[in-house]
Each structure stands twice: as C-alpha cells, then as structure tokens.
Length: 606
Ligand SMILES: [Zn+2]
Image 1: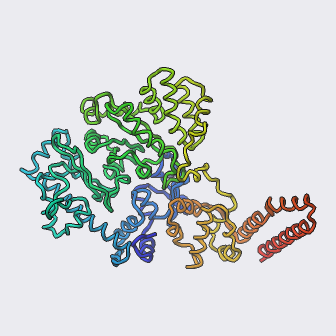
Image 2: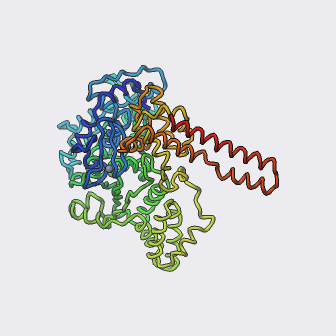
Image 3: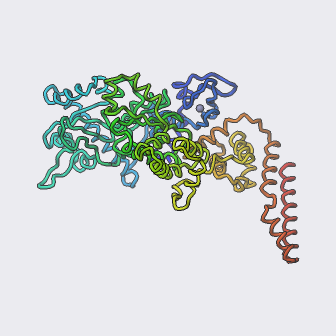
C-alpha cells in the first residue's frame, strides 16, 4: 500500500514521527488523562471531542468519526495520498527515501510521472517568464488588466503567457535537453502533420496552470486574447492530468474551503479568478466537465458535510443549467461516495443563478462581493432548482406541470435514501400542486425504474456494528495480552461483520508477525477501516484477563447457538416422520452443545 516506498522506510517514518507534534501544528491540544484533546479540525464543535493518544500514536474524533495514525491525519487534513504523506513526514524527520529501481511496471510509471512533472515545471517557468517579459508579455498583461486581475491574483495562480509563433516552447524545452516524445506525452507539443518536427500546443494564449491539490502542475489551460477560436484550450489527458479528478484552483482554495465549510463551483478559469479577485477565496472551477463524483469526494475532504454552491451564468439559467445540473444531482444521490464513512451524507448542494446577462465577473464588478454573498445565501436547493427549471421550460399549464413531473421521475428515482426521496416528492407535489401519492405512484411505475447504480447495494443504511464483535475487536486492540487466546481459539473466523473481521484479522496478523500490535493501523490500507480501528483502540474500557475470557466465551456461545436452520431441519424431519434423520439431528445438536460447554469451562478455569 505504500506504493513505491519500501515498507521498512514507511515503518521508520512512522516510528520517527510524533503525532502530537504534527497535530499540534493545527489543533491546540490539552491533556485529558492519558490522552490529549482539542477541537476537531474536521468538523465544527464547541467542546473538544478530538482525541490524540501519544502512547498509541493515533487520533480519533468522537464527534465526526475521523481517525487513524499520523499518516491518516496528514491525508485527511492536507488531502495527501498515502505516499505523499509518507514523503512529507520523511522529509520533516530527515529520513531518506531511496529512489526505486526502474524496470518494474510500477517503477516505470512513477518514473514517467516524475519526468512529466519535471517537464511541466519547465513549461510553467517558460510561460511565466514570457508573461513577465517587458515586450513579449505586454499584450497578455494588458488583457489580464482589462479582465480586472491584480498582480497578487496573477502571482497566486502563477498565470503565464504562451507567445504566438509555432515552436517557442518546443525550442525552449529542446534547449533544456527535454526529449521531444516526453514533451509530447506531457501534452505541450504535438508532431507536425506534414514534414518532421513538433509545434507548440499553446500559442498566443494566456496560460492557466492547473495544479493538483498539493500544488504540483499537472496540466495547463490557455485562452486566446481576442475572439479567436477555440477560445479555450486544455492539456489533453496525461498520466498526470485527469480532468475528472482535478478542480482548478483547489490548491489555492483548500484552506478557505475548510474554514468556511463551503465551496463555490464555477465553470471557467476567469470566473474563478474573478471570485478570488473579489475576496471570495473558497471557490474552484470544473475543467470542462460537469462536476464528477471524484471531484465531490475530493471537495468533501475540505468542506466535510458542508455546502457546495454551483454558480451559473444568468444566460445559462433555465434549460442549459438544468441539463448540466441533473447528471450531477443523479450522481450525488445514486453513488456511494468513495472515502466517505457515511454515504453522500449531508453534502448540501445548491444552485446560484446569476441575474440575466451576468457572469461571475460582470456581476462582481457591477454589484460587489456582498451582493454575491446575498445571492448565495438565497441559492435554491438542487431539487427545487430542477423543479423550477422544468416548470419554466414546460410552462405553468396542466400539461406543463405533468411534463415537469415526468422530467423529475429520473432524478428522484436516483435518490437512494428513502427519507430524502420522500421529502423531495413532497416538495415536488407542493410546487406542482398535485397529491404526493400521485407522484409516488408515478415513481413506482414499472418501466421507469433505473437499473441499480454501481455500489447501490452497499447503501443499505448505516451498518450497526454487532456489539460483541465490536467489543472483541476493541479488546484485541487495547489488551494485547488476550491475543494468544484469540489466536488459539480461532475467534475471528466466526466474525460476521466484514469490517470488524478485517480489523481483527489485521491485529492478529501483526501480532503473529511481531508479537505486538504496534503499527497495525498502517496495515489497514482502507481509511474507513483505519478510522474504525482508531476509534476502537482509543476506547477507555478496563480489561482484565478473566473479563476478556468471559467475553470470548459469551461470543462463542452466541455464535455456536444452533441456528434457525437446525431447528427447521428438526421440525421438518418430525413432520416427515423421518425418525432416523430426526434422531441424528437431535444428537448432533446435543453433542455440539456439550462441546461448547466444555470449551467454555476450559477457557474460564484456566
Ligand atoms: Zn471531528
């Protein structure tokens, strides 16, 4: 799971890092018993439920359920990937990470990525230098000034300029010994159709570098200075750049998103820069796609269960905006959001429509940031927006209303949570002026049902963890003395809850390997399991050997209890007057009960 970083180095980094030191940089911690507590950085709270254990080197929030070790903290708080978190800490604690040997497929990919990264950095340097050039950069600087952008914003977003001419960047990169095929893979140059040689992808355009969440340049966008076409041009998809996973401006916006627990989403580079120019810093732009599930998951790392506000131009109001919103709505509701403990929990998505004829830039210039905030405060919920748009489109006649209801069938069927769905049905019924039951029947009508979305089966309501398995797992994490017994009696193989089973088995595996449970949380690659394990490990139960053995006995009794199938089989044999079968089943049941009782006594009397 460490990707390319050797396991032993990950281990070294974990040992060297101090979670208290890392957390203290962002949370004021004060002692509480053996732990430290503070106000959770992941959710809003007034009394501290965020707990850090210096002893176990883990954290857990009893308010929002976030938790894990020092890597998990950095991943969740800074939005880093696991290897990035390891690297960040390695750097801080001066642990060298050896470059992985090439050759392996994965090594080769990582190598390509880092080479592409280096080429992008060079291109960024080139574009920025061109913008700053007194003569060459003049037209682009004039354009940015016309768009009302300050030097501070230009600097913060590292804007650049690709000068006209066919091969300025190509020649610059050649001068820096960048192989042409690599620059081509980075999407910066393309092979000429006729003859040989390469030409620049971006020419005569203002350049908007696209950064990933950590501030690395993964791609570029370019806009013409005049009315030329295409108005916008983006990097193609590369091993570094996937537009479905990127959000323009997220790196600059992330702290503001976290602080405000809200994010504005606009559609273009200049809209986004206009918002920043007017002091609205919790804003990002999609890159020519409708908002994707991946992007929502990324945003949720920063806004938690806060607000997503989609900002649409005045001229996009109505049909166009609704067309763009409907798939987002369906995606938000029908998919299990990766990386989220609670499914699509409470992201509150609203739609801000600017007045007719305005885009964010013109609106902010004409009316200012306060007017924008006032519009945002009144932004409609997504469903209300979609209903209004449908009514607007079809007209407020009986037929129009019927059409509007028809249009909402698909989106409402995508809502997998029955409570949310019934609230939406109620809203639609009120707006259209028909009975709720009519709409509910319309939704249930066969032929309208959508096939189940991927992952829908996982959405069956928040799983209540079985109490005994939960207690046993907590015991294993908090009281390693019991692990020999657990191992010998094969207790975890009877676990039914797959999450608890995964945690318990990881604890056992670690114990068998090292004789301790230290470091087990890393072994759980899945952040959801890490949170679960951290929460259980930080419980304050008081364990005694005899108490633990009683718990095991109780669990074995519960698991060994003859199932309903056995009773049913006996009843069937009875009805069928199959005496041999009936006797055999009874005997089996008695023997099983006796064996369980013997095992229990042996366990408790040791
Ligand atoms: Zn919390």
